[in-house]
Length: 112
Image 1 (cartoon, one colour):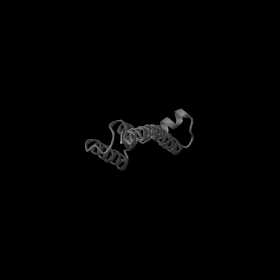
Image 2 (spheres, rainbow, N blue to C red):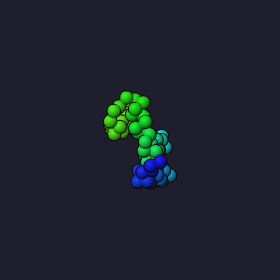
Image 3 (cartoon, rainbow, N blue to C red):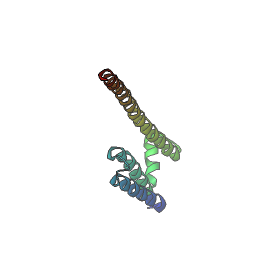
Image 4 (cartoon, helix red, strand yellow):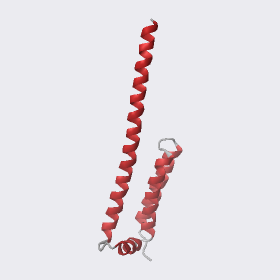
C-alpha cells in the first residue's frame, strides 16, 4: 500500500488550522464543516492514493487526475454559491436597515 505522507500531513494541518479558527470565533461552525470535509478528502487521498484511480474508473473518467480537478471545481462552485446566497441575505438586511433608519430620522425630524 502506497501512502503519500505529504498530503496526509497537509490535510491534518489544514483541519487543525480550521478548528483553531472556529475555536477563536474567526470562522463559523457551519462554514467550517464544508472545509473540514475537504480536508478529510485530502487525508483520505493521502492515505489511499489509489482511491482516485478506483473512483475515476467507476465514474468513467480515463485520466484519474481529471477527477481531482472536477471535484475541486465542484467544491469551489459550491462555496461560491453559498457565499452568493449569504451576500444576497446581507444586501436585503442592509436595505431593510437603511429604510428603518430613514423612517426613524423622519420621526425625529417631525418631533423637533
